[in-house]
Length: 93
Image 1 (tube, one colour):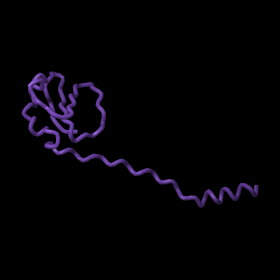
Image 2 (cartoon, helix red, strand yellow):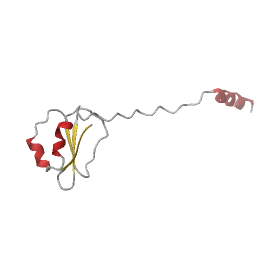
Image 3 (spheres, helix red, strand yellow):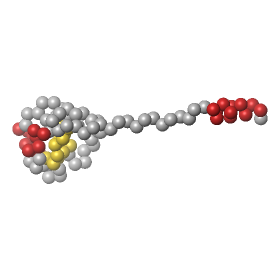
C-alpha cells in the first residue's frame, strides 16, 4: 500500500497536457493572385469556353460530385461547373 502512494503523489504534481493549438485557417485569396478577376466574364458560359482561354499556372475544374481536396493554393484558379455544364464560379485557391 505504501508503494502506491508515492506514484499517485508524483502524478498529481505532473503538469496537465495542453491541447494542440488549432491550425490557422488561410485567409481568402485576393481574386487577382491567380487571375480569377480577369475571368469573371466566363460565369454563365458553357464549360467549352475554357478551351479558348489561355491560362498559365495551375487550374482546377470542379464538377458536381467531384471529390476536392481542401489544400489552399493562392496561385491556382478554380472553375466550378454546375449540373448544366456551365461555369458557376471562378475563384483562387
